[in-house]
Length: 98
Image 1 (cartoon, rainbow, N blue to C red):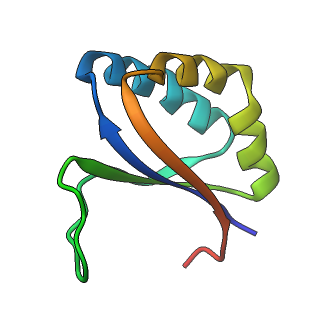
Image 2: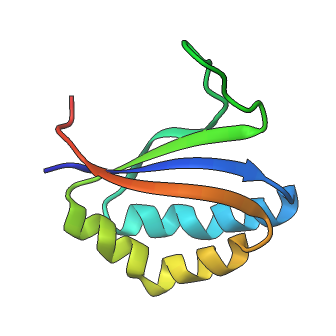
């Protein structure tokens, strides 16, 4: 079953956030992931959304592959680069691809 990483993030340091992206993106691709939404400020249909928060959604073939990516040495480098540069919340969810 397809698995997704749902991300809500606030960029605190743009230069360092760019470095995170440089490291994270190839690690995602290596584990079969692909971006469905990348760093977009969503439009609130109901309620409010903090204007500084962006959303990213990454699709992986399955939860096992997603977890391999998240635990990988490649992504560990990206997470280290992210420290203090991006405030982030990550959720993992399984679902069917449309």
